[in-house]
Every structure is written in structure tokens, then in C-alpha cells.
Image (cartoon, rainbow, N blue to C red; front, top):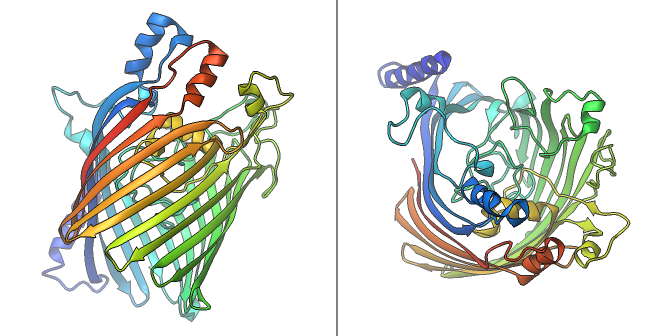
Length: 491
């Protein structure tokens, strides 16, 4: 902590003196930053909240548990930094980030809290300083080996596109809670990685190669940022797996743009090496077209897992029913009506199961297989379904979504409407429908306000299946609603 305080002091004093001194090693200094504050309230939420679980357990016993809960809170983050040139073709980027959450919604399993303060006494200065972290700290060498368009970036950095379905480390806007496809622990609205990334950008080609460290699964001190699957097994311990070993990502992404003037093609492959699963891989391709106001894309990605890269089979070796043969199929289309409105539609499936359909129908299949699609993407469909722990787990395991939406632009306002239907991909179970309404207002350049309301209406399929299996009715509430009010700002 002393090192961080000293670093902060050096940055403040150094940047102030820039106006008085012409430093040879800091040219073209640019300051930047952004932040977000979102307040939210959820009625009959599906988060595993102890405030709802404990009374139910005490009163009715474990089989009588209801996952319904009401909660609210505020999440906020702020990043600020600077970029500057060191010498010709070498530049640096340094930024700090602060983030915090008040309320119950961002507590995983209702347990995580800040032990350093209290609601009545307030937090200590130290607790605030502990929430300030170095978000980016990297050096970029441009024109590497005198090759135009070739560069290398080393250090703490962001990576990927915010709309990526498989790999993104960066700022997640207008998303107060965890998010759909993230690993269940260890991430918030701002993430970055220690990495070395080689970029090539010239003409119609954008390509990169990355080697990144995601931290430890279990270690001292406890660090769960690298947890790919929140699953452990006796076999892992019997084989003497080192759970304190770092998780790493190695991969490449290439985009070929404006082929025949309308076609873009993206291809990518990532190998995630992890102590629990020796190698977990994601390979995909995404062609897209743009013609006037029409945009359309189709993405197909596969998961592999095993002792060697790009293997398929059991995710663990102890006979668990979790398989690595998962895939993602995602299609999107939109049409912009002369900047006055936009209509859009989407379809996505991922994960999958075998034998679950027979089990839910009261039969006893010989084998049940679960094929989760695990990734670090930023696909978040719906204000309710996409930001709830229980429904997020469903989406990772067996998921299909259909989306129809529209945006209408009027002066500084943007009005948005979205309808979703969520269901299981393979077992035929209909999860339910969601309707979202959002209004965004651009107050001034760099400052936007937004308000949104979403309602998820659960299908009778879920409650009826659970009642048939457990004898308990009303497992999930009929309607879950979420209200969000927030602001985003850049400087």
C-alpha cells in the first residue's frame, strides 16, 4: 500500500510539473478518464441472497428454499490516467481505477462485503485507498522491427472489443451487476490483464497475438480472478494438481475488413491453461456484412478441454458429467433508418445438455451430460436475465435466446425497446420472456444519463418441472423486475 501511495504522489506531482518543465522523456501528454454510477432495484430477484435463503431454510427446511429476494444498491467506478510519448515510436499508458458497490445485489451468494467499515461509522481512508488499483500500466513500441503497422504492448492493459462474445477485458458500460457469461467470481465492471500483446494493423487487416496472466485459482493471498470453472473434484486433489498455479491465456485474433467492400471476417483462437482444467480452448469465426444501413453477422465458436490443447471429452477425469463439447452460435442483424431509428434482431445458442430432457419428464436416462460454454465475453442479453446469478448459470449450461428490438432517436434522447425469449437449447425447457425499456439522454458531450426498466416473466415450465421433481411449488416468482438509473461520463 505504501508503494501505491508513493506512486500516486509521484503521478500528481509529476503531472503538475509538466506545465512548468519540458521533460525530455514525456511528450504529447494526454489526460483521459471515464466513470459510471448506476443505482438499481430488483423485485423478486433470483440472486442467491442470504436475506431470503436463511429464513426459508429455518422455517421450511432445505427443500422449501425460495430464491426470491428484493434488493437494491449502487455501483460506481472511475478511471483516470494519461498517455505520453517516451521517445520516438515508444509510448506509455498509466491509469488508476476506483470502484465500489453499496447494497446487496453485487454480493456473490450474498456473502461478499467490505469488512473495513460500517454503515453508521463510515469507511476508513485506508479502505478507500485499498479500492484504488493500477488499471493500466504499459509501454507500447510502434513500428516494431521497422515494420509499418506492427507494434507490441507490454504491461497491464485492456484487451478485446466490448461486444465480444468470448474474450474481453475492459470497461463494461451500463452493467451494474456481474454480467452473463463471466466466470462466477473475481470480476467487476472494470477488468484488465497483465499481458504482452503484438498488434498488426495495416490496410484491411487487424490482427493481434496475446499472452496474458489471469492470476491464481487458489493461493496465498486468495485470488480467484483466474477461476475458469467454479468446480473442484476429489480427482483434482488426488492427482496433486497445484491450485496455486497461475492461469494463463495465449491466443490470436484477426480481422479482415472490407472484403469486396461489404464483407468483414474475424477469426480467433485462445488456449486457457488452468490448474483445474489443463487446457480450455475457444476457437471461432465471425463473418459480417455492412451495406448502407444494414449490418448482419453470424458467429460460431467451439469449446475444447483436456490435457492437451483442442481436445474434447470429460472436463474432469473423475467421471463427472461435465463435457467440453460446447459451442456458441450467435446471429445479429440491424438496419439504421437514416439516423432516426434502428431496428434489430438477434439469436443465440450456447452450451447444451444430454439426458436432462428425459430426467425432467420423469424418466431415468442412462447418462446425463452437461456441456457449459465458458468464456470471458461480454454478451449480456436483458437487464434481468443477463444480470442474475441463477439465470446466468442456466445460460452457461443450456441456453437459447431470441431478441427483437428497436431504437428511436429524438434530439438528445434515445428510446430503446427490447423483447427476449429465453429457453434451453437442448432439453426443451422454456425459461421465460423479458421486456426492457430504456431512455438515454445526452446532457452534454461526454455525459449521458439513462433510465431503464426490465421485467422477466418466468415460464410455467420451470416451476412445474421443479415441483414434479421436488414436490415444492412456486420455486421462482412469476415476475422479476429491475429498475436502473445511472450516468456515464468521459473526459
